[in-house]
Length: 236
Image (cartoon, rainbow, N blue to C red; front, side):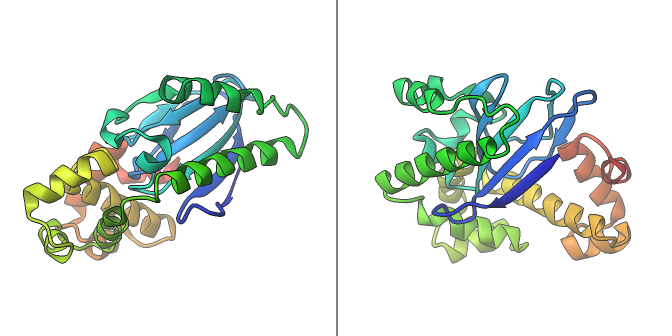
């Protein structure tokens, strides 16, 4: 069971909740985002930006609530560069210390309370809004770069549009997104391709529309980033 909605006060962020069935791991595709998470088993966690798919294993009945922060916003909320968290799942207390412990104390396990997940989501949302405000908001460069790359703009053209050279853009992207602009562009292109394929677009057409050289190129990229070829990914 999975639900999500747009967050209020953090542009582009998404609040989500789920109850795990257990069994096979869930394949979480890379997306350039950082997540602030609450688990009924593990407590408060941070999921850093992944370069490849993360296989998440949950206990049967484990409850999750998360705030997915859009590319470039997480560092301002969490107070650490994104590349410090790349490919990691970290207890929030390791980053925030006492502040995380105090937040955890306010998040008792909702159990079967139908409003419990909503209260936890509201707490995650409120702390993110407060920390983002205290930080002066996300770096405005992040939204510009992510938007251009998500639209399929080449990295060189994106760098020129934001007034940076290639090396300077890479240096700025590492702490904002967790990796350089080329990796972010590959991940966002795969996301576009998967969305098209899940909407019923044939894979050959997906490859052309998403900017791959051909369907074989699409298959190689999806296999490298998602861990499985497109047909298997879509079947799951």
